[in-house]
Image 1 (cartoon, rainbow, N blue to C red):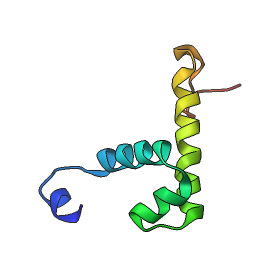
Image 2: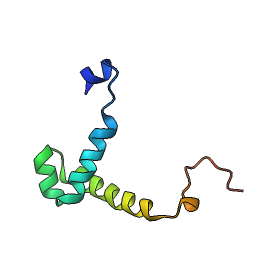
Image 3: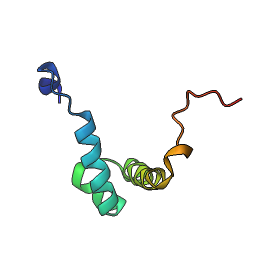
Image 4: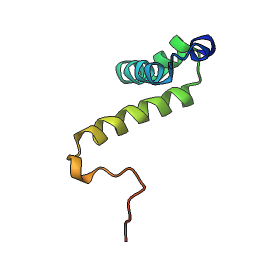
Length: 71
């Protein structure tokens, strides 16, 4: 990733999308073994896939980015 970033090619979004897809399609133990991370880290990735799925189903008016005035 470092060499591509130095050339102005950002890779983090693509990497994260690929990781989320793999985490959603494999059990955490298999995911962890495939990419060489702990099962705890793989479970956290799997938890993010659940969050993203729920977040994507919300109507547009109910999404908050965290910087609106809530008062």
